[in-house]
Image (tube, rainbow, N blue to C red):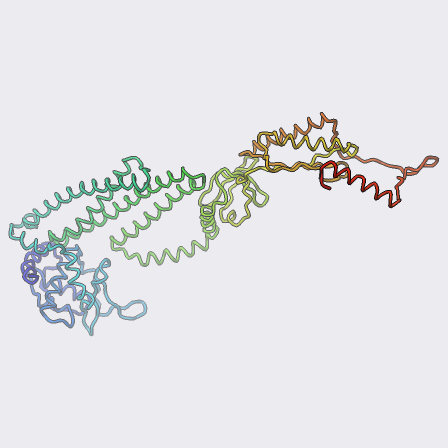
Length: 542
């Protein structure tokens, strides 16, 4: 069946190919260079120069019948894929060498690595790899029994109209109609699936329907372009026409997939922003816009590389050049790279949030924005400080914004002549002020006579405020300190301030001011024991 099909298709294929063939002259067997071998193959399969026996000689080490079938199938594959051969671009030299001086193969098409020629002796032949891959490539080009479809539809009409058979025009019309119907089916199914997934898996976080319509439209166009590329060989257009159509379809499909990726990124960012709204962290709100930019840049770069590949631009030297240039740029921009990775560490570790008050290296301020390069901090002088993220990520950061309570500690100094009973009452009064204040922490605070200062008896006040910001803390301090001042005034307690007193121990004609100490050990010990008993009786521990 396959042999009969090839025998039937060959005249039709050769006729349409002759309408667009670049070489229509008769070629002798010449395998002396890659160009000569390709010319021998193609020109000996033209309608006005049909010599499959001569064309079969481009394969080495195979029998005549097998070589003829491979030569015919290879040309059909090339024509169906739109692989137009411009023999002027093929080397004419018998020996091709690379930069190391060694002989190498010649690849006929940049997009088809399995189709290449090698030198055997003094002649050039299609490689053994190419011969092995031709049947598979033929099956891939004509799937689903499409070759049988061509056989049956070929009898509808053999009259040519604008260089195409009547059955080819019918096939084009049917293909356009099928594409139109397939587009609406795909669009409906994709919109239904996206809506269903959004409602069930994404917890009803659906953006406006316009975005879903755009995603469905772009994905439908992409799938439709791929379908046309797969179905086009069934019509078996002439090689030049097929080449143009396939090229444009591949180009359009890449553009559609780039736009589709952009729409999917928008959908992802919408979903992540909804999740971010449910979290207490504010860092993710800063990360999401940066993530959108990074993802879209990656998509555009990948799309450009794929477009260059479609345009038959060898991207290997370009990638190598970018790699070398990237190393040079990385060396010249080490600080920028460090800052970029520093920003990643900040986003991952989250040492602070937007609005937090942080202290590092003696500097302090409130976080306003975290970018990809630097963090913007509003100081208490209302100035803006931009700190590179690479530096900030290496610093020890004291995040004051994460405090549960705000501590306040101070020493209240009273004069040395204050009676002990009054000091005791003053301390108890301060404790009661802390206990009744609305924003102080009630389960932990300390108010005690703490030290003997140079000119005062120091009462330590160690308390915490349960307030969300610095303003609340200052307000609490104000109220507590003002309460202590008013309490001291009520009790008649005087605050000490630095003073100096000059004592003259001895003056001529006057009694000495030297203190008289009791040195009797028994009397001293009796006085100590007596006070300890009084202290125990008061209910306090010594």
